[in-house]
Amino acid sequence: MERALSLGLAERQGDLLDDSGRSCEKSLPEGSIYSVLHRERDKLFPDEFFSDMSSGKGRRSLPPSVLAVVMVLQRLAGLPDRDAVEAYTYDARWRCATGVGG
Image (cartoon, rainbow, N blue to C red; front, side, top):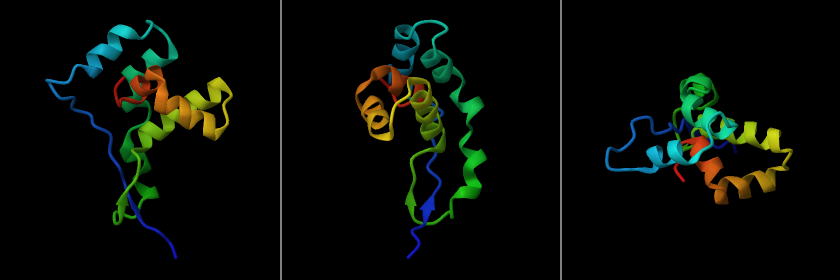
C-alpha cells in the first residue's frame, strides 16, 4: 500500500511577535554555514522545487527545504542519519539554519 504525502511548506513569513529569527541572526557566527543557510535557505531550496515529489493528498511532509538543509549539515559533519536527527533536535545552530528557530 502506497502512502500519500502532501507537500509540507516552510514558514516564510515570520511572526512579528516571534523573536526566534532575529535571535538566530544575532547568535550565529557571521559567515558560518549555519548563518548562510539561515539567510539563504529559501533561495537555495524553495519548497516548490520539490512539488513533483508529493501527491497533493495525504499527510503533510516535513518541508523539503528543512530536510535539504539537514542533509547539507549532515554531510558536512559526516554524521549518520541517527546522529543528524539528534543534532537537528538538540543543536540550536541546526534549528536556526533550517528556519525552525533556536
